[in-house]
Image 1 (cartoon, rainbow, N blue to C red):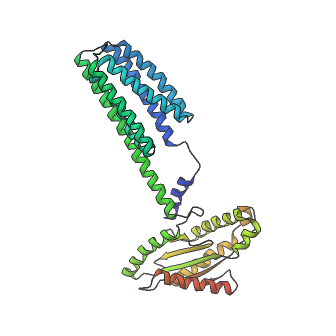
Image 2: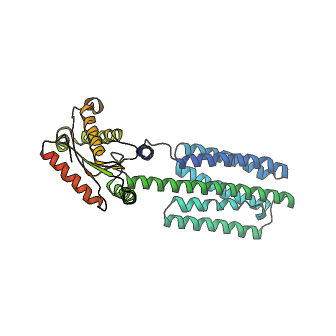
Image 3: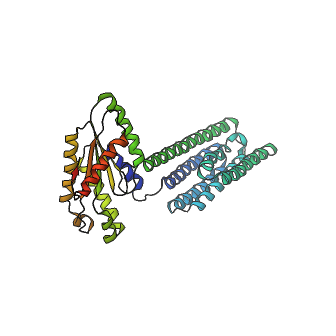
Length: 351
């Protein structure tokens, strides 16, 4: 359980990779260029050489879009795409008519505009797009196609354009859906974990334990509680600095994770406090687990791992959740045991 969660956290907080946004731009440019190559042969075959050579220009433009995207030149890439689509759609309508369906390509901008910018700029851009669309429609009312093709060929072009736009809109919609789900997943991870130690945070730990308590009330199986505090942690921060202190907290989390079971729940409970919940565990086994964790600290090579011989120890207070008892009450007993252990000399497990 912990391993899976931490892998997800590392994916969220890992090294920066090329954003998928740019990959989508690059792939779209590649696909659009291939479509224009197909259009070149199609319009030559249908007897519209001007429109055929327009597609060669479009291929060149999408090549520029690809390299602008590769170098993360967003404004250049967006400007080129807008110019190519609007001019290409206008030329298609002027040359072979509105029924060709070239105006459908303008519709692909709508989801991109709505999902990539804030409300006011999106509203302005959509207004401009609508004006372009209506303007092309009006243009088709008053002029006859300059280079018309027969009705059957026009239907083929219309169907081809409709199919391409449908596929491209589907691809963009799926991309935005995937992006939204990834963002939600990222927010969920950030909302439930401590960013430094990659353990559950206090609020989410309470939610998880509530579920365990419901199971406990049905089955009466034991729930063990270990509350751990790093001894003299303030001295570590004061002597070595907060960077070393953070490194110690990270290593503490790692040590604890190695010493507990997969089903046990671990959270960073406070500044240098850690709470471990052990489902289906009697008190004697809870004590053994706490002693195993404490012993792991004594054999850990701190100098090798963080470059400073800090050698921290821990004091742990343990308790067992009783029937009909609240979590706060059980943790409070573990907390009292913890402070008794500190008063008795630290580096011990206290019941």
